[in-house]
Length: 100
Length: 188
Image 1 (cartoon, rainbow over the protein chains, first blue to last red):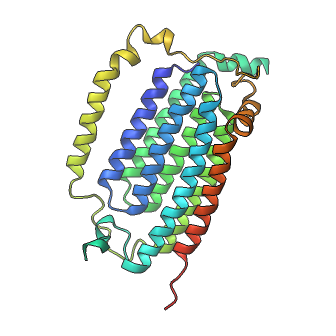
Image 2 (cartoon, each protein chain N blue to C red):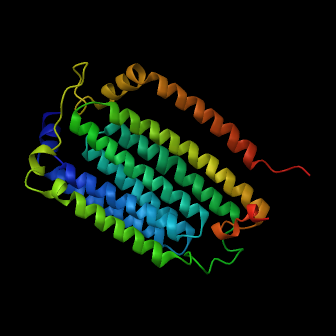
Image 3 (tube, each protein chain N blue to C red):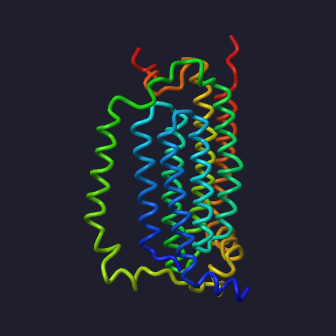
């Protein structure tokens, strides 16, 4: 049996790494990957609490989150490709179209 | 099945979970600090596979397989395709990190320490051990979510949470159409 606090700690650490990655990296692809990592950390919590309570709701919800993450990646990568065509860069500070 | 049950209930699972957790953290760390974007994707892949192992330790077999299929099979390949498509070498990627990176890291560390300070007693106090241990229990239909994981999850998905499931399929369709529209070359 896995103690709950280990699971919570792991998901917390992973979420922190994801948040740090979103804040520090310039490459938009890596920022997207970090967002995925944060979603995964949330998933881990959902599964842990589903296991803790013995119900299946958390696992079903984690599956839905996984599907949403896949949709998000598809849209995000399409946006990256479109931006690359327009601005010839995938660095987040190169993307300043609204600045005029 | 009996032996499997015993194996899962023993202390071994805890150690396996710890190993997977360390692997996931290492992969995630490699992801955010790697120089090359391809190495980042490999770190991400390691983290996702280790997460799948962690799900397995939590007796969520279906989700572990779904995780490998969706992330290792789909998303990682998609990322690799886009990295090849956008030619990382063409533009200068000498500056990997944002200017405010040290500040951002410090902010993350400070908030992490604050969080841990608040929750340390809850997570690791003497009262936490009993209350927070994971126990297998029966679902409403008499299915054990741990031993009959796939049956229980499918019952949940297709009976109790059918509407969110169907809404998700619509969202996926919209994402599909949106991705095609966005990525299509503009005709001038």
